[in-house]
Image 1: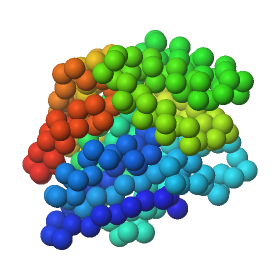
Image 2: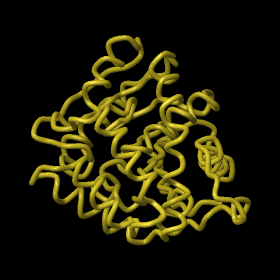
Image 3: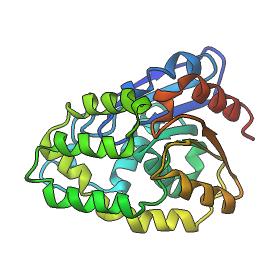
Amino acid sequence: MLHYTAYRHDISKEWVTFVHGAGGSSTIWYKQLRDFKKHFNVLLLDLRGHGNSKPNIKDAFSDKYTFDSITADIIEVLDYENIEKSHFIGISLGTILIRNLAEKYSDRVQSMVMGGAIMKLNLRSQVLMRLGVIFKSIVPYIWLYKFFAFVIMPNKNHRESRSLFVREAKKLYQKEFIRWFKLTSEINPLLRFFRAVDIKIPTFYIMGEEDYLFLPTIKKVVGSHVASTLHVIENCGHVVNVEKPMIFNEQVIKYLQNVK
């Protein structure tokens, strides 16, 4: 089972589950924990191979990870803690996992908060992925990760986010990075499906105006999905919860408190 920490509220019955991105861990939510604990039960988890979670033993002799198997890891934790339903808050690749979870287990999802959401890989993103496929077994993964982090978060005000993710990524092993990177083969058809299908679960996209790779697509998605809304944070890049935590916390908590 994944490593996780649950914080229970004295009164509230509502749960918020935080899902980090690839290369990160539950520690990236350190600027959220105090504020969210005031209002909700909080579940922080480390995805397999990240933070304090070990690779799933069922995959010990396989190099293949899938979005469905990683999503099932999250559901296993919810089941163990008897959490019937939760709000889910994700960042970057974590938003793909949340959207996939909503597709497979819609009855477990009260709402989705998608920070730095990924709903399409543009040409630059696809070139990055192809370069990664070519070099993933040759170049030390941390070199690739630093390069990707710089392309996604290029500005000076993104430095803290870059440093945090690179520091967390150093805890991975090369083999684990390669397993996660192979998930990119699933991404394009999955994202195409997500864009086409309006799941009609309340969804709050919170994006940085400098998230050049992903924001344009999110604006189009919100325009066509009836239960979706978007808040764009000025002077902010991809990792909105780290760069602008006060705005992120205020906007997300306000949204969750008004979800019907």
